[in-house]
Image 1 (cartoon, one colour):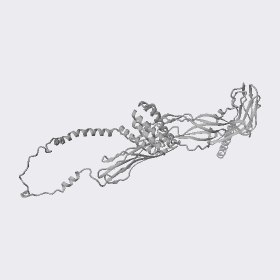
Image 2 (tube, one colour):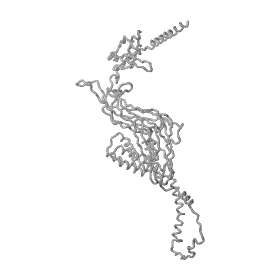
Image 3 (cartoon, rainbow, N blue to C red):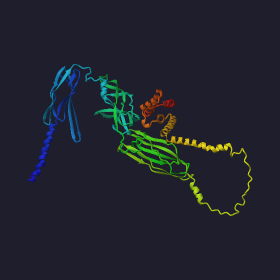
Image 4 (cartoon, one colour):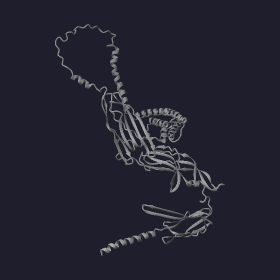
Length: 594
């Protein structure tokens, strides 16, 4: 009895499984008729598809009463495997032309699948009077619409604040048509984004697919964006006017197809980017907006030197992220070291994945006295969007040894001299040579002691003390005025970069980089806004609020636009000279108004 039970159970399961699979296979068969439309004009065309999900034989089409077969049957087969499940489709297609007006019925079609005959349902068609634009005679514009597409491909639709995304604009062209020329109608404005255009040096046609169909495409524009605001941000569309060569049904004398030309306007459409705010949980107190993956260090050019010699202390951040959009931390140097304003350096290259490279502040440090001076560790915090965590990096402590130079105080010397004093023993004749009678004479009245000049010099320190106190308060107020110091620094940098731009005339990239920095630092000095707040619209609003005339505003915005366009457009030396002269003129005019 136990053996019989063991033999029959697997057999029963196998029979039951086979029965279920067979039942499922038989129940899953579909065979149906699909119409392109159920009502059409007598001058239009009708497409009829007979689709099945399993392969069959002996297909018998219906009698297309009231219609003339223009094309068909054409057969198409589609088969795929998805997650181990096979998908199959087979279709017989016909293109029909109505022969009269009225109501007609397309009767059943039949096919044999798996030894069984399946029939489609009959469908009714209404044929009306002729229409103005029949679907069988497409115009060149409609053909261009169906075969020409401008697409904006966004690398990431939900980035974090200040995380890099790329937008690539591709023009897809079907093999049925050709493009002879194009020109941009409206370039998108990336409001609330920091943007960097990536120059497209050559237009190389490549093979690709769009909505499942084969196309040729070219990359027209590439841009890297850093969102400066959280929430739903809109990317305006890029619009082009394209000259398209569309084939017609006509042939020339040699039998070649005749093409007609039409102009089409295509647009990439608006794209919405859902920008996530940086999390509040775990945000460090010294976080300054850096987003990416960075390495942080503080180094010095030397650790041992003499007084009055100089060394370079460098604060550097390198890696991949928004390197141009945050402030570097400042080192905590001892007050006995003389420190000069830092020199900012950057070595950044921008790719479709974002900015990468390094930025640094280089401080010139001059010790005045002998001794050992520690430079304590400082921290730099950033947000890594890949790990979605805040990271704080710390620099190493550095000890500066000043081996030669004056000491900071004479206290130690006085102590040493006191310890070396000797006891002197005197006798009664030690001072016998000293005269006890003097031959002094009265002081003349015009002598310096007791004169008006004597008392003026005596009282002068009393007058200098309040002046010194006022000067000291003024100096402390200036040193504590962070905003004012930033404005002065930006003003100096604007003059510096404007001078650098003048020296780079003829070198397009370096000239426009220096000119753009000069314009930005000028705005920082005059409008007291940070680099992360820059956008042309915001600049225009702020300048209008400051009562700057419209011509100066337009000139300034035009210069910023030229600085951006110079990265991917050719500019002559004459144009660069004109832009430099224009920058000097605009800054001078705005300076008077601000």
